[in-house]
Image (cartoon, rainbow, N blue to C red):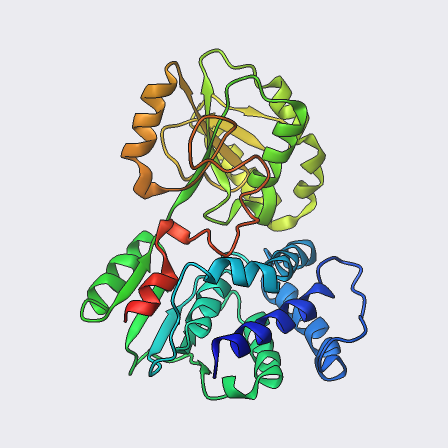
Length: 352
């Protein structure tokens, strides 16, 4: 299969996904094989929502919109123009996926196939409905993918390279188990935001998207704030208040109530607004419904600190603070060339 054929297949998949990019699902004309797959994917969305309480319809549609926006010919060409992708004997690449947000492993899936390799996928039980169905659509659009995509629920074996994502504990296991294979091993990371006090109401409102989208379960979600000494949080709380319906979600509310009780019993200082808490803490990983924060006095010292801790950080959200910063509200809208942990997976795949 030629590279252009693979690109065309994913462009068709993007067109298909665009129909499901908001809650008002609308069947479009001129989508390949729509009569065969449209209703079936609506059903898979329903199953995914029922199976995992964190996968709300809104968050699933948000993920699908993100991928439909990414899978355009322009974006794919822009992404791939920096590489020389030659037709080689394909290797079998195993992908062990996380399940914290919908389709969280899709970029690895896309990267393996776009490079011309075969893929063996072991999914998380938390996210098992969407990708297999989309793989069937992809195979129907481009039948040459039929022999290149496999799923397994068993121990992964017989592969040539592996991309595995998990917690810090499972990452240590992956590093040992896959020590004799070319690998990308990802563990826990969190994202931080740096505020100066000069942010507009719109900046802070956009930041709330980085905090609350997917209930804060993604590595690109902001879980920690750095604020100048004496920062007044009133504007921050006003800007995030439009997220207050989140407390109506039972799983979120249970976490909010539990963590609030722990903080109160432990007599920790915190600020809260009825659906969200902020607490001064040096850790980067905050519990659901909680955001940690730290004060800073010198921005250069803060830059040094964040550089020292870069192995724990996925994204830095700020406005004029860092060269590699992400703008407020954009953490969950990565481009195809925004690699997790800043490890170029395409470069890795082309070298195996």
